[in-house]
Image (cartoon, rainbow, N blue to C red; front, top):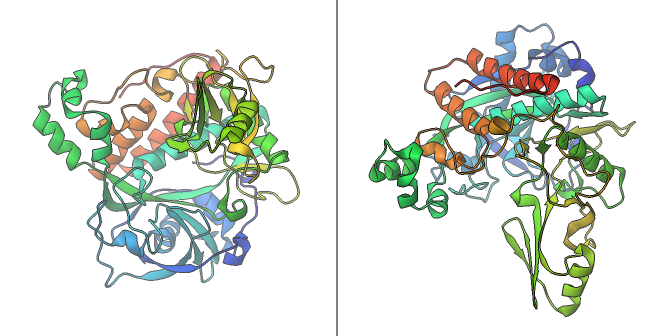
Length: 459
């Protein structure tokens, strides 16, 4: 899954010791090997490049090495919880891992022996002292389908950088491991969003009765995985946002604008700032969170900053995420995490907000671009990705099985990745089929923006 240009894209420092992560707090924790894990795909060229001791190893040896050093879960993730039945750790091999600040469900492990170095493992579970919860962003798992979705998005963005000669790259991925475990889906959140009576009336659910739908949702699970990435540094205290006025702030905005010419954005509901100034009441929300307006002086500052004298305005917050110091000698940037990217339908309409980490920056406001500004990008008809597949649906839509209603407001692209993960776990498709699907989707996107046309997806 690499080409002759891969080595030029594998830029950035190789970190060998935990201290090189540059984190202010780095307490070790114990992680447990997961029996029955298997490699879905591995980038053998990249692993040989980064770990010289593997350069003479064959593919089988490299993949065994990958499993031995990356198929782990955190201690609380191994315990029975709302999200899984857990695993027996009494005989499990253990190793030390490190979780930098704000690292969520990921850890970094040291590889010892001849092939020494560090591996970044996304999907290893919650930190010690935490409990996995059956709630979006709280279960500690990385869903296998989402890992596939994330990786395809990464490959497409890497292609765009290459096409435009952008001095940017994406964080190298060593491989993807199916842990052989399932995580329970947050069915109650779905039921809160869509009452059962509403679900039963949906056209795609006609073949299911209400009781069957309820049973399917309450028992729904999805395969979980670990994505193995090159170890890297993050921003101060784990912050992904740039400093106000920094070159990184400008670079993030530049990349967002480039991707928008393809119809792609990093902005999601969770990074939207909404300001509603209706009469004497000012309401400010950031994603799902209500932001307090303390007093009249605070209200006046918000109104002056945002320019919302009346009405309701949504600002799309840039959510491009960088590693830190990807290249010490240049302003080359390296992107990390790609699950938030999707193609829009139609045109961009909201002001684009550049968010910053400065504590004195009210509402994390770093500046804004409005649709009428010269540097506010719209999708190019020749470049934009197919909205029906890569974009969020105009209405609730899902492939016809109750569990896929969890992604009914997500792009069909993501739904197909989740379905592929289920089929892989069930033995209906092989790992070669998964790799083929990834390559097919990347080529599909490349073909679309090269020819300026749309292609029809055949399931």
